[in-house]
Amino acid sequence: MFCLNCGTQLPDGSKFCFSCGAAQTAAPASAAQRAVPPQQPVYPQQPVYPQQGFQQPAYAQPVYAPQPTGALLFQAGNMTRYNGGKAIGAVTGSGDVSIYDDRIEFYKKTGDQRGYALGPIIGAVVSMNGAKKNPVDTYRYQDIKSVRKGKYAGLKGTIVLELKNGKAVSFVPSTKQGDPDQVISIISQYIR
Image 1 (tube, one colour):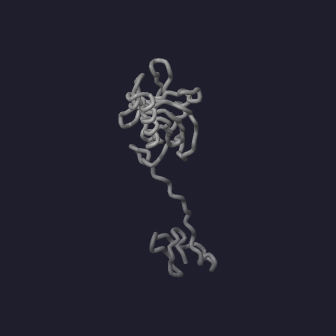
Image 2: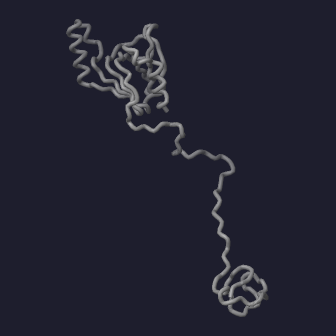
Image 3: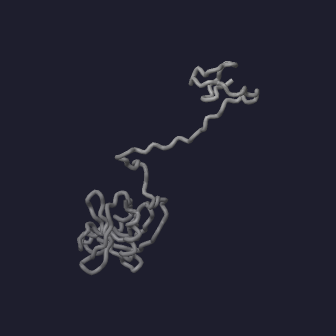
């Protein structure tokens, strides 16, 4: 037999529940009713929210952040690269720029211009050999602080990458394919 109030199992013929003290005066239960104790309702546990000072977990990422896959987004074409973000800097090579969703790659055709002090032919050979030794420079988005538009010699639009290490690198497009506004809009959505 079970208590009519709290469901505690009682010896047959009990007049009071030893657990809750309730009188057991109801009509005797059938054998089927006695075999099954009354079920307590089961409620799902409600989440506990902090009252104040709630902070988003560190692992949560913003919904709008694109996830890198290494996919090629845009071929920006031939560009000349120079160090710094000012109007004119030391040329460090020319080549093709490809924009991926996790990086920017600069495929060098020529290296820096230092060899040209020895003459145009020797300078060209030195510059091309320098490019062959290290043909691709990679700029990962996590290493870039910002991207902006600049002007080379006050005339031509440039793409300026401000790096987190404090340095800047600029690219001067040689063709219309590398329109600075278009390139900057693509890159800026991947910089965090």
